[in-house]
Image (spheres, rainbow, N blue to C red):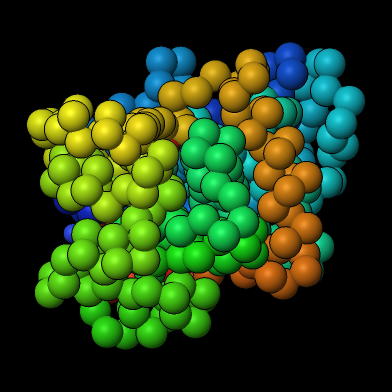
Length: 327
Ligand SMILES: NC(=O)c1ccc[n+]([C@@H]2O[C@H](COP(=O)([O-])OP(=O)(O)OC[C@H]3O[C@@H](n4cnc5c(N)ncnc54)[C@H](OP(=O)(O)O)[C@@H]3O)[C@@H](O)[C@H]2O)c1
């Protein structure tokens, strides 16, 4: 198979498309002939040498894909060769083939084409697991999504709106603000010019915050929480170490939660397979009905993976970036 590795840490040009042995499905796994793979910001960190794949996972980049089942391992009964699917991966999506535990494979929502489906697994699983399973977002709640125009943010705005939440989001430009309002955000806050704390507090505070910034926003996120609010940190774009005002958090009966999807086991109550099952049951109907739409900003051929990484690094993109894998 062909696959993308980053043998030495570096910029986009450190990515190398190379030949590797075809994967075989282990018991409980399937092999997917990949149609497309989604880019994630963590892929940039992995390329730079800051985010190694979990122990036992492939060094091939890529945490999600869509494609057709090409082989089925022992004990797998729910998938057949030829099924069109998408999947959440620990690694290995930037390739023509990938092996994955059957529980991390999902059907393609009705009405979504095979390539576009690669934009769904990581955002749907990350957002559902964090805002609903961990933070218990409810109808009428105010959700603050940091970075609403990106891959995660653009899906979070739509999903939370579909669940009946009110959505505020931070954005880097006026164009991105307009994009986020179209997706369903009521408050778009330009993070370079305005203080999100003031605006969110004027609305009673955020019941849930989905945070990509980590350290840089910790203090202000706690200030922006409503009483009983839940801050879910999923990114470290603003660093990893910060002081927490425990008194302020306690007075609000607030919670700070941090999670990564990639390091979760496949099995277990909040493992990847359980999350995928909830996504199929709860999120796919919203996608099939058109209430939540996969946001694909640009698609690059697999061979142009360096250009795709450079485009994400520029910060000019909206929504997801995909790599298309030609047969
Ligand atoms: N923990 C997990 O399991 C998990 C899973 C998936 C993703 N993530 C994390 O989620 C985040 C988004 O990932 P992605 O793949 O969607 O990347 P992406 O498309 O590149 O989005 C990055 C976002 O960061 C925003 N941003 C940059 N500086 C900001 C600031 N100072 N304040 C607020 N927002 C700012 C950007 O907003 P503008 O474009 O408006 O500038 C952009 O929307 C990343 O941190 C990623 O690591 C975590």
